[in-house]
Length: 108
Image (cartoon, rainbow, N blue to C red; front, side, top):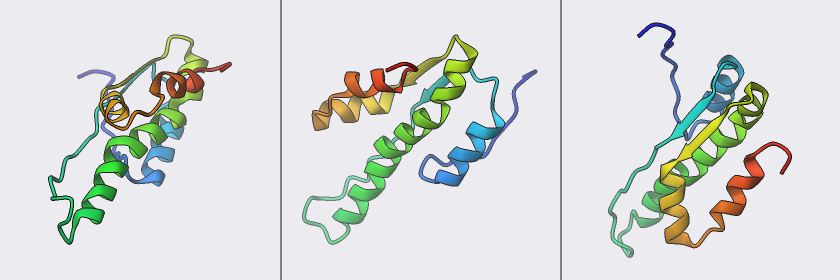
């Protein structure tokens, strides 16, 4: 596709996020749809590791990506942010997500 440049981006890797935000200054749409469900039982020996993986991939990574791209989206003046996994995790965890997302917008 013309104008599309592939870019390595692991939402759990803060260096990848910083590099993407630094190199992609013409972004006007950011779609966060990263998410995983490990499915470990609550008392399984791996449940804490699974929970950390899920939280980092499904909430922290998309949040960090949104924060990193917020200035670029604001500068471009037409920025859109879609955070499908943040909404689903936010609902499950009762995080005040609308307030959080408003604060990502410039001037808030």
